[in-house]
Image (tube, rainbow, N blue to C red; front, side, top):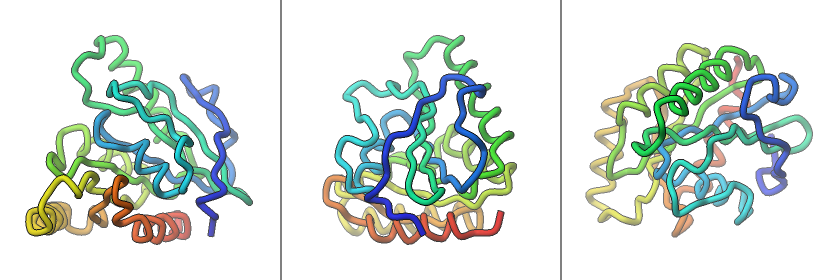
Length: 196
């Protein structure tokens, strides 16, 4: 299994021709622009500045590849669902995502990052659908769990699990407090180890 702390930035792609070679194994991270995806990647890898976080949602317009030895990758997909993006950019994003999911034999799983206060919005369901279409298992990180009381967070977790059934595994996560980091790493190990 990969050592997440050894993750390093590899390259960014704005079009399919720039994707890294389709060998080895990779797990993609997807999420709404303000769901805390970059913070989650940084917390899981223990590398503070690995994935760039921004106060302005929607800054990640590229697919970012991070490598880990020997042949594992984490892939940071562009955030979605941010209203102030021009239609042409939204269309370009969709084409890039469709090309990514359709072309990557090395993709073994997808982590869908959702703000626990607003889970399972339209874009989230689209990502889960694409993962399913690609034959990939999915894992949901309900981020910013520290923003809810323990009881409320547990209720959201239970409700999301019930809603998704066998479609995805689900957990609570807090990049700020470090809650759920070990559970997320174990989920990634499963995604990397799953038969594709």
